[in-house]
Amino acid sequence: MRLPYCLISASVLTLAAATTSLADDHWPAPVQALASQGLEIHAEFEAPGGFKGFAASYPSGEVAIYLTPDGKHAIVGTLVDAEGNDLSDAALDEHVRAAQFVEVWERLEQSHWIQDGDAEAPRVVYTFTDPNCPYCRQFWEAARPWVEAGEVQLRHIMVGILASSSPAKAATLLGAEDPAAALHAHSDGGDEIVPTAQAREIEEQVYANNQLFEELGMIATPSTLFRDGDRVDRVQGLPNDERMIEVMGGKAP
Image 1 (cartoon, rainbow, N blue to C red):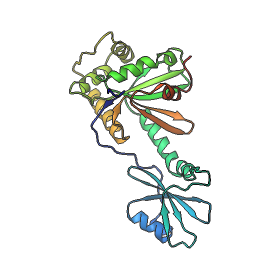
Image 2: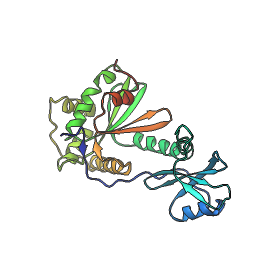
Image 3: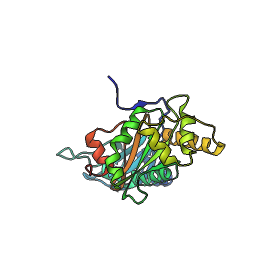
Image 4: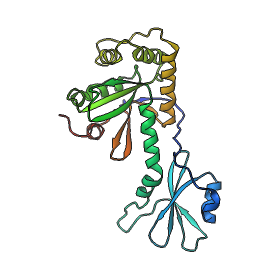
């Protein structure tokens, strides 16, 4: 079975939260103990049942801590109500992920990308694109209705990871006289990009994009990030029809 993405062997790293935790001695003893074991404590929040909640993060994710009413014990995990609703997620969004979402979006904006679509489009979507990835081309084609209608601007963050020729091809597209036209010609199957020598600055841009790809924990191309309210959501691989509507912010025009 062929999977709808190009799998990449890469170290999986996650951005640390931008918020700064208070000094360890600010927290109750069980929470301090968890901090000494590597958790970063970001904030205290209200919790039901006599518990005190604490929002925390570690290198690969976020977690809620619940201090028991006696103040001597802590439970790490998800708190649910009688209907099974997650009572931890909103607090983690507010106290940990919100800062991470802002930081992630800023890093995407500062990366090296090729504009695909109207600069004034109301929705911006970032996608990591390897020139040798066939599913990146499929995603490009699937996005045409939204892009051509002026509703979505795709920003292709060019990476060179899949094959030995990928970095040079990515640099050639970034360094083209008209990068948008070059990417269009390459993606619609008309012109296969032929790698050419580029300035050191352009090669370093591809390298920086590769690093960002890894630091965001991506493992496949295309990997696409988009805003969902205040959150930054992601799809790794070619989105199915339902996810495509979420990525593009609505049904195809």
